[in-house]
Structures are given as C-alpha cells and as structure tokens.
Image (cartoon, rainbow, N blue to C red):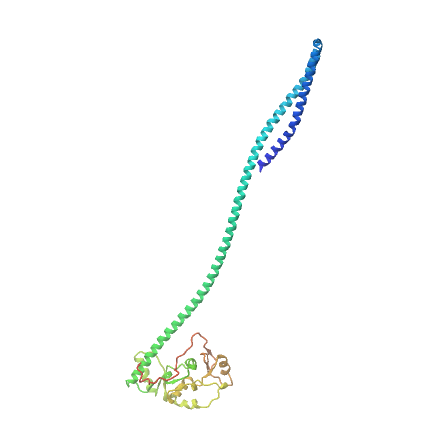
Length: 360
C-alpha cells in the first residue's frame, strides 16, 4: 500500500514535469530563434558595414555582451530540460517498475481471491459435512438414548425374570420338598405304619377352575394332611420329624367335627356373594368340615372394588378374596396386587384313583 502511494506521487511528479517540458522547450526554441535572429542581424550589419566594422565593433561587442546572459539563460534552460528529461526517464522507469509491481499485486490479488474462493468452497463443504456429522451424532445420541432405555427395560425384565425364576425355583424346591413329604406319608400309610391318613387337604376336593386363584390365595392349609384323630396326627408329625422331611400341618377330623353345625348354619352374605367353602366340592362329605375349618366364612368377590365394599358392610367384618387373588382380612388388612398369584392349590376334578392307589 505504501509503494502504491509512492508510485502515485511519482506518477504525479512525472506528469507535472511532462506538462512543463513543452513550455521549457518553447522557451528554448524562442531564445534560439532570437539568438539566430540577432546573429543574422549582426552578420547583416557586419556585411553591410564592413567598412564601418571598426566603428561598429564596440556595438558588436555590446551586442555580444547582451547575448552572454541569453546564452547563460539558454544553458540553464538546457540544463533544466536535461534534468527534466532525466527525471522523466527515471519516472518512466519507476512508473514501469510500479506498474509491474501493480500487475504483480493484481496477479497476487487474483491468486489470493482464487484461494479465498477455494477456501470458501472448502468451508462450505466442511460446513455441510459438519451438519451431516452433527445430524449423525444427534441420531446416534437418540439411538443411544433409545438403546439405553431399551437396555433399562430389558434389564428390568431380566431382573423380573430372574426374580420369577428364583421364585419358581424356590417354589419348585418347596413343591419338591412337599411332594417328597406327602409321598413318604402316603407310602407309610399304604405300608400300614401310619393309621387314619386321608391325604393332603387340597387333594380331597375340587373347585371350578375359575376359583383356583381365589382358593389358593385364601386357603393357606391346602397342603395340610387330614387324619382321623390327634393320635394319628402325632404319628405323622413324628414320622416326618424322624425322617427330616420338613414341616407340615395336620387336621384331625375328630377335633373339628363339632364345627359342622357352624358350617351348615344359614347365613346371609352381603350382595348375595358366595362363600368359598360352598364352591368346594369335597371328595367325601366328611371332608367338608376340614375345608370349612381352613377357609371358614371367607367370601368370594369379583374384584377388589366389590371386595372392599362388602368387607365392611353392616356390623360384621368379612374376610373376602377376589378372583384375581386380592385378599381383605377380617381385621381390615389387604394383600395382593403382585406380579405373581398363587394358583394350583386345588384341581377342577378329582383323580380317578385314591392316594393309596397312586404310586408317587
């Protein structure tokens, strides 16, 4: 930029000297013409007055003296013109150099412009790629969130499945233990070493499949062993203890026979709902009191709303179980609502063979 300003100044000075040069040349030409005219005049006078040369010599010398300043001025003008011509030549050379520099600067400018355009195109492409990468990153983040959510769901499901598996394994082990216990008792009874054994309470009757969950939830004594007397119950307990078969409960029919009267007593239930014991069909009439002993006056409701409503009707508190396995105790406590419900405690139909005939 500094060189450009200097070049402009030099061009202006050259232009000024170029403009002044014709004037100087005119002055030089005018003085030259004047000198020539004077010289011719002098020569003419000298030729016309040769005789008078000596007489006119002083005049000639005087005229020559007059020419001296003119010649000096002419020399000065010639010097000025020479200097001006030299400066003009220098300025021309300088102007050429400046023009070359300007051309170089223009080429550099064009090259820079080309580079800038290329960089802008690259920047535009980079911006496009950036937007694509940002979109990919955003999509990846969303995918990660989705996968994370799915992973959490799967982890929850796996945890729930593990819990179910653990519960199922525990139940299987419990069922296995209970099955071994009942099998051992049946075998001992068949061998005649245990007297008065009728079998597992849940196997001594049937209930429609619709009420399987309800009875399995409300009757905690379905695995109890029904026997004739207290002595029979003691013998069963001692056998189980001696063989380390676990724990069980025995129901002695002679001790609960007196509850038949209570079982058969007419009773009005809220909203006319059925008692659970009335839905059970015992294999033999004598087992009915055992089932009543286990469930008593428990009512069966369609859902928890009805169960809540009828459990508190009137002055009496009722024990109510729902078809889905919800249970409201007579004390008002409520249970149920989990993912697992109890079922399979009783069958919908009786086996064609007696426990003594079935080899476990």
